[in-house]
Image (cartoon, rainbow, N blue to C red; front, side, top):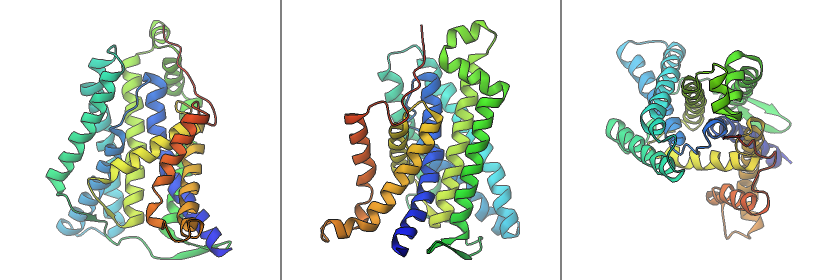
Length: 308
């Protein structure tokens, strides 16, 4: 029973991260109909920038650990938002009316550029996240949860609630929904669609950067390659929930995290020792294949843009 509770707890932590990243995919797709495959690398850049800033503040200015992290985090999020806006302005906006294959290839190209840029700046190896968080653990229904993991889940759900309020209760959110439904009509009604699209990339990048920092803090390290697998899994989560649907991204992320964690915990037993927990990544892609075959619109359907 304790093993099951532990795997569920681990799955909620993973799912919270996947949900945050998946929201970046689904927000961009909902407005532009574009799969931003560079989003995983923005997540990676968030983790790498935060680690570099924390280490610099600790070494050069002798900041207290908590203060160093807060300052680094405050700088990291806007930096990644500017990165997302720059990607949209330079790589995607000129191709907005191009055939769908062109932006897709460009997204893959941007992903490769960001990955190599990170390797040039920080090298190919792992960057260690400083030990600045308390190591306290809590027991919930037989599962041991560290303070960092508990903070990840709480911050993720607070962020998701804030995003829901932003999209459904603010003028910016109303403009985003109008642009997603029909950008031409929204423009005629006085909405600056270029600014809205740019803001969407900025918000999605902020969510991705937050997830990257969470992953780095949880595992104690980050590397230039981490965004690739995180991005693919979050994309699978978005497809599972129904890409283009914000609630679907959250549901898909949490479900995928639970499926992956439970699979990793029991895979060895189910396969008689043939496959171990190191094969847990296969579940994301099995889920993706299953959804595409049996329910291409995802669990909560797809919010299709009405474009003239």
